[in-house]
Length: 209
Image (cartoon, rainbow, N blue to C red):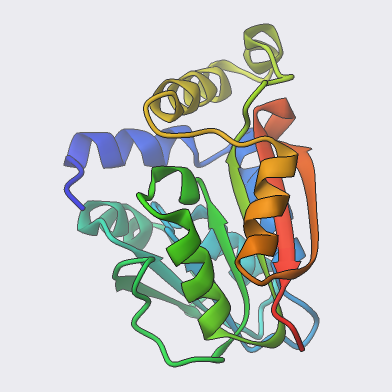
């Protein structure tokens, strides 16, 4: 994927603190389990979710995958505990064997793909039986307001305005749509909730075990 170094750097700076990181931390916590050994951040971008996975599950090896080499340059700038591996690859054709991950997460990845179902099925394939996956995507019918985002600081305001602007040219989801999408791809125990101060939706599901 071709992303300019300026775009990658700006995205990394805008999403590296505050509420955005909190949403990544919450997502990381929902997609692993005590004793998890291997976790996947699909569409890792500048690596925020992967780093939160490493913090929440310090005994796990975390693989952060993204199609953009520029984004991975930004990810590699960040300090890790040595348990994160960065991989350049396609979320719709994951370069991993089946059943090798205990959990997987994706933040702001499905809405940018031409075929989110293909990505979800690939994530399902590489999960072990009973493994959990979670995704945060821009929300249709936003409850959050510019005023609310502004109260969280300029960085969060700009990141939310950018998220809304980009997603208008791709897609947005409500909770029901996301739940239905995961169920249609074979996930079990699917649940969805509003996230990121009302600007996003988070959905989780398990591989049948």
